[in-house]
Amino acid sequence: MIELIVSDMDGTLLNNKMAVSEANQVAIKTAEKLGIKFMVATGRGYTEAVPALEEVGIRCPMITVNGGQTYDENGTLLGNVGIDQTRIRHILNFAREKGLYAELVMADGVYSDNKVKRIETMTSLLQITNPHTTFKMALVLALSRLELLNINYIKDYEDVLTEDRLALKVLVYSNEGQPELQPVREEYEKDAELVVTSSFYNNLEINHVQAQKGIALERVAKEMGIPLDRVMAIGDNFNDASMLEKAGVSFAMGNAAEGVKKIAKYETATNTEDGVAKAILRCIDEKL
Image 1 (cartoon, helix red, strand yellow):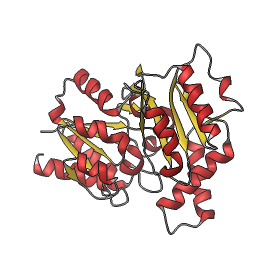
Image 2 (image 1 turned 120 degrees about the horizontal axis):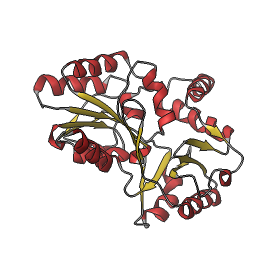
Image 3 (image 1 turned 45 degrees about the vertical axis):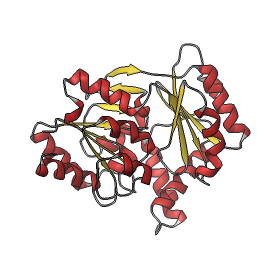
């Protein structure tokens, strides 16, 4: 019997309006009533992740920043895995040289040096994932979502890259998608201290090699006293791959990248069709 369910957020638990559907809420509550714990594992920073969960009353342990941080259900920080600032500066400068927008995730939140680019990136993503949505509607939705995400806007990343502060991740964006991001991927995949993944068609996420969802999940499950073969993981993109490989039961979303579907043992519906709810209920009904 499964004892722990771990779900990604974007493209998985969240629908295309970046909210948790009622069906997903109900399925999570059903599992919890049976004594099954629920946990989120996301590429988002804690302050970005919490609002969507609080909207629907979900309070749970969290793996954030792709494994860069872990929290208990009360929001108490349990651990950090960061990147040295020499590498951080190199990544930010390299992205800038390529004409790409980048964001910095610090231990205390997400930082952006260009609010306009942040809005453009979110709007483009929402328009692509909601093909019947006009640009104006996507912009309104992007602005409303961004108000909840607690982004810190600054003029220069050097303002936060001080010796007493920990950097966890760099996100690099392109509205043109992965082909334009490929030079960044190739540059930093060569570094054994880093791992490069993606959570959307328009981004790259660069973490310390130990900051991966699968590594964090293995550690958290051990602390909970739950064997990995009694863990169920659900995800849609390559930053979820490591936890799908570790979990005894793994589901790829219907909207998942094809490579991710090959890693997972099962497939569920898309994130707009309550795929998380369907995976949870199937797991319970079939005693996977």
